[in-house]
Length: 78
View (cartoon, rainbow, N blue to C red):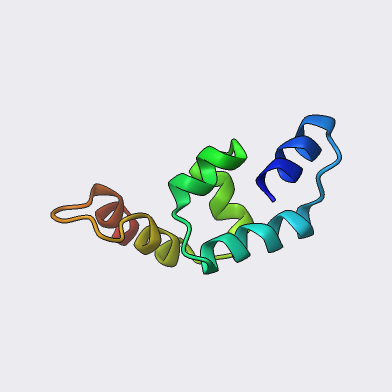
């Protein structure tokens, strides 16, 4: 799956809806945002745009398992 995406992106033939479906599937399979970002060559913001999560849901996903104060979470509340 990762190979197909990176190959299609390199050729410039990737489509939005299939990319969204793949990102959602990877998240449902328990992949972290950092894993998806690294494997697909995306920034976390791009994963967010493809995931269709709300900003709050995505921040919760990004900070899952993080102990202590999260500046990102505090900024979301402003």
